[in-house]
Image (cartoon, rainbow, N blue to C red; front, side, top):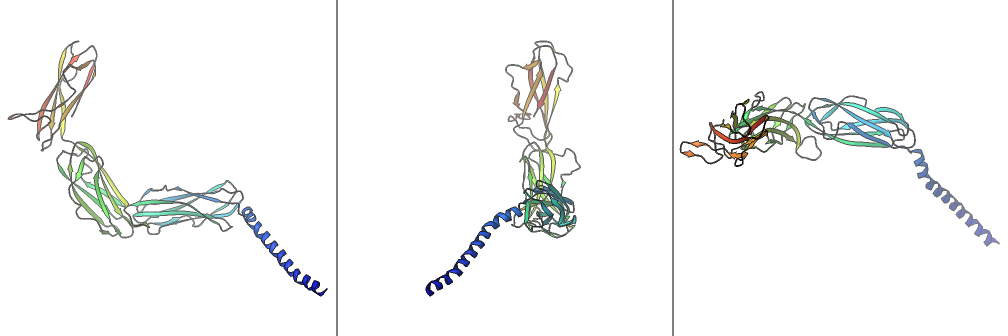
Amino acid sequence: MKKTSITKWWLSPLLIVAMVLSLIVGSLAVLPQQSAQTNGMVLGVVITTPSYGAEIDVCQNFPVKATVTNTGDNLAIDVEAKVSFDSFGAELVAGANPQSLGDLEPGCAAEAIWTLHCKNAGATNIKVEAWDNSGSVYEGGLVKIYQMIDVEIIEPDIDCAGYEVCPSQNFTVRAVITNTGVDTITLDGVDLWADKDSATVTSDPTPNPSGEELNPGDSITITWTMHCDEMADETLVVEVYTNIGDEVPDFILIGYDEYAFHQRGLMVDIVTPTGGETFCYCQNFYVNAVVTNTCNDTITDVKATIEVYGSANLITDETATKDVVVNGENGLLDPGVIPGKTATDVWWELHCDGAGSVDITVDV
């Protein structure tokens, strides 16, 4: 009897422990479901302004706007949003931070707005996060903006409308770079290039800007020599780079300028017919154009093309495009070669096919 009594005595605590563990495990098993019901709120955060990669001038104020949306099933209470950014490149000038957005019903959204000031050139990361009274923090999209200093191409003369450079001619390009920020910056590179590849850089920049430090308000003038390779409506581009303001050192565009000009050397004038003449049906007539090389250097591979619209056509043996040929002192020059400051004639024979007007153009 005592053995039985003792056995019962030791089994009772084990049963109690088992029951307690069962209750604890059961409680733990239910906790995730209860938590999901309590925190069935998810905040979506999207930065709508500025866009990723936006360019902002140094010393300019710009807005940062973010939309916070309750994408969950439960009420989000006491929602707040906060903007953060790289302090080297920007500073907050308006808007509470964090900013209270109140309570958000499921599916509802609110907008947070701040104003930042662009302090220095470089790349600046901007991030917005939001939370409610549950303590959960939701990070929004990260945007990177590029803050630009002042770059101005001063030569060729920007005020000279229709500035023209002749093929085979060298010309000078100068650009002024000014640090409009509040801190010293280091230049890591300055590039000059022609958008249509019709001109090439033939000299290193003077002075070499790599490693050059610019204090706030300071400027540096960079000079290059370029060569005009062919005729084109060209655009010069000067770009300035640094690696300040980025987590990973890299070339970051912090300023640029563009300058459009014409690379010309040839002029063409139709001298006959002069316009307004009357030709009879089935009559042949000539078109004479004068092509002039306005440059000092010889231009090669010059061709002229006629286009005819209306009731006339080139005669059978005539071609629309032909080499321009110059009659030099010792006879005809090679086809397509026009010495500097030289003019020559190009002829086409046409046939009048019927009544009506005729429009003629000649291009070189």
